[in-house]
Length: 402
Image (cartoon, rainbow, N blue to C red; front, top):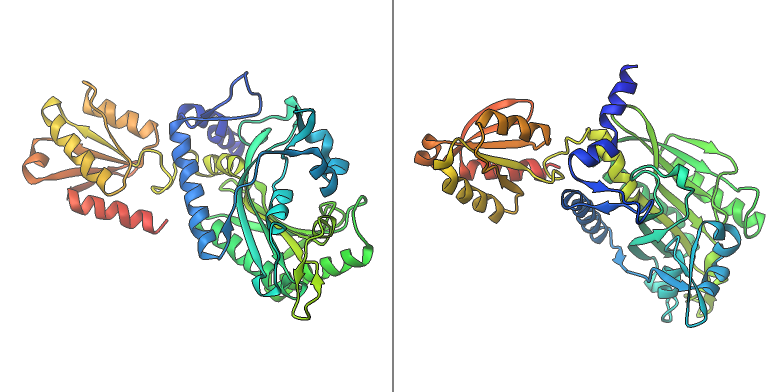
């Protein structure tokens, strides 16, 4: 019962409304509207993603949201997925709104002649996709019709499969550890409906199994749950209530590069077909945000908090000083607000705590005299008086530690 109560308290739709993070509108069912506070959290997640992917030698791309229907027929999505897709007709030509980003990445790979020396090529895309979910299944940010997948598509030689998958496993671990998530790993094998030969599937499954074993990863087998084009490794993260969420995935694909005649010139001067590795870490930004809101119960770590500190003047007399403190903090790249309402200090502190703002900076006459501020931490209370420089340094240090 306690867990049920705790889960209700942490419900991301309830907190999303209270903390003004996102909202849903009748005008676009299943397509969330992000409010300014929610955009701060979202941008921080995307900035982290971009930084870590640059460091891991990924090249960022952007592909169109809408492409011709023939492309989806060629990729196999039409046969396996068209009930979940949205369509449009422009200039008497049928278009599909993309449910996945892979065909766009393939077109970029095919846009020029490739050599074995270039491989692996790692394309990363924060791609907005649309999938038709039944209206009864929609749920806040967890089950939506429009979302941004943190996709990447790696084009590699067959002899690079294991080292590339191993690098993906390391990157996934780096991300999840940062949020304090424990996770479980599952290897999903050939489904009943699949593309390609059985031999190709056996080779792909053996390659994934080999990486998991060589890295000593504890994993479970999930027979028959692979994607229609290849086997996959799925990551199920455990939140602070011990609930499991499937987020990250690594999928091997020998099919799509063949369907699109992808090729590279090998060392032997002959044309070879690359292997494609599809992978996502957040899964979708929206769903990952929902999980984080519930995991942290809306009490985001300092680096993610929409407002990192509220500056609370004791009275009207400290208002100018409060705004000068604000500009010092903002110059250091911190997100702070002044509560300049003509209300009692106790009420302002209570409201800042209710809004789950990590810190409060209280300023009175003494603080003006000493160019200082009284630091309060949400739930911990008073932390003492600090100079403005020391308070900024403390914030920056906490943010750098994630």
